Image 1: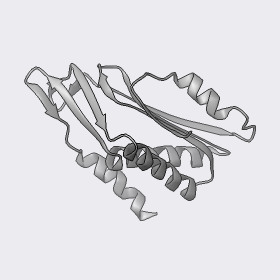
Image 2: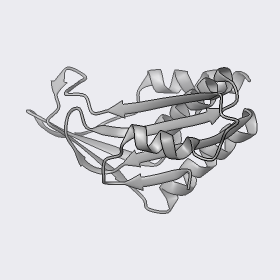
Image 3: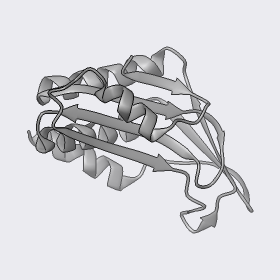
Image 4: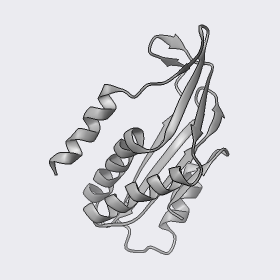
Amino acid sequence: MPVRVQSADFDLSAEVAQLRRDNPQVGAVAAFVGAVRDLNDGAQVSELELEHYPGMTERALEEIVGDARRRWQIIDALVIHRVGPLLPLDQIVLVAVISRHRGEAFAACEYIMDYLKTQAPFWKKEQTPQGARWVDARESDAQALAKWNKF
């Protein structure tokens, strides 16, 4: 399955090895791993909690991967997104794409991540010294998404 939403951590090497297995035509692997920062918008972050709607979230992620498959000639893609409480340095998300050539893999990986950040139904709450706060969408994420509408 190209999409998983889970509370458990993931092993980058094992996931990429599994994605490549039985695909001798692979010439490129592009992967992105997002991690919890200990500082956001000027405040120390002691914990990040991610919430989602089961079923709805997976369908949204599958749609994003499907769009990438239609735009680029990729062999396969994988998205793993964690939910629940996470600590600074914990891994949050893995996007990995395999293709015959690096350009396709890089573009599809970036596209999936840009759409995931802005279109996937996840909600983030940070614990800071000032108390809990919900994380709003960033303008920079919207700008990153906008570039794909030019293609």
